[in-house]
Length: 505
Image (cartoon, rainbow, N blue to C red; front, side, top):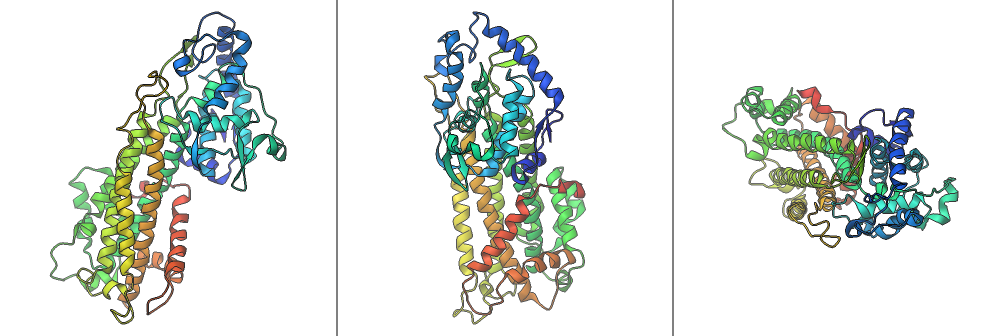
């Protein structure tokens, strides 16, 4: 991948973050960066105070820094700002942060030398992963703490992950043949001032959630069929009479999943007039979540192709401004958190319908294949699902509605966007687990419907998980089967999304 030649999108970010695609700085970008650097150097030679170039940071913006201390200023901002705590961010998240930081600097409005971006690319290409604690950013002057932990590695400080364990950078860089650099004026500030930690987290979640939305709809179709649902609610006419993009896409996907089902044919004249909402309203609910994903995808792709440090170089001006504020990302992450939580709520209701003898239309009570009562079947998996849904509801309280002033009231309104993204990642993982439980129950229910068969598409899905389910007739320890199914689902979600929705528009 050549940085600076075109806009980044979520798919390209995932290729670098998870599949180690190599990254280089485009020659045209180098010239652009050199031009903006010249302006910074002219300012350094003048007496004019310019934030972050020859002044202190944050509440110290009024402190003029003498010329002989300007390089120490850039080194010290990394050392002082690396204040993260908590669990380390996952390696794919860190790689995504490095990529987006390199890309925004390569846009040529930050006044840093090309060598700075080339060194960030070298971290990616040599699989050097800085140790970055997950907590500490308020998403206001960007993600100061996470970015500082990454930038420290460029100067030979901080820590690097070796087999998942943090090691002092200076002790291990020789293993990678990596030569640290000295930062010049403004370069330390440009490395920490930006929204890349939030952007990286949100972009990876969006990729996985787009995959999850499709797969959850496929699993929902299997559940609906084994529960003798009517596909009438997914009719094309229904989607055409309500103008929401996501609903139409999901409905068409569902219609495809019902084609040729013997289960459907077996109850085509049944007296039931309407199905419960968790079956009948799949297009409306899954489709609404998909629409939120489309919104969040646009927000994050706009952000990763923006200049988010301060000040920015524009023509012959160095402009102090607030592009580092994470509000767009914070709001999108909170909205998506709510949407995924409600998707999980609907998944849990289908799990209950597959298990509940009052609702599951002739299936074994709680899918217990042995003697009911002696065997409890999958009864307690619904308890687990309920617990996960409850946790998601707690996590869905928006982080973006809170603000705590920082830096002596200089930064008096913050986005809390990183917290919004961190809890979003937890919600996504919980919904992934909920989906794994639904798939396990739906597959077990299809076994109970034999010898009848579902549609070709549903049977293909069942064939992928049938061997993962232990063929037990009595109660057994289901954890091994569940873990296999959960790994199967996770693998479906982590791949680069294919823009699958275009097939159904």
